Image: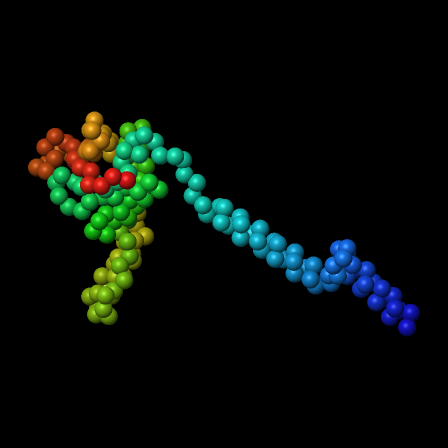
Length: 172
């Protein structure tokens, strides 16, 4: 009987660690596990936040929608340095460093519209391509009015001056 009373006193001592609140050892472990879980979640969130440097002056000029003078889909340069084309053919990220536009882009995945063999095959092809990133680097120069800019481009019939011109469609 003495042993049982000592055991009850021991439990009572563990339960009264916090003045005014009676917590058992199981509750303390549960609270500790929850706190550790919250810390882990906070670390995951903080490590996944892409803290970017502010946009440079040239990067601020590029933000907006631009149409190539040679025709085709417009390019939308977003303030978070994402890039999309209006026809949905490409997505990517961009940056301007030392007068050079650096773009990393890929073709997004397209889900099949039907269960036909050709449609599923096309969808699998776009899935494969969505993992293939391409990189493009070119010199970029802005017109004084900020309404157009040019990328260096090999001289050809569409680019006789060796520049690929773009005109602003919409502002930021």
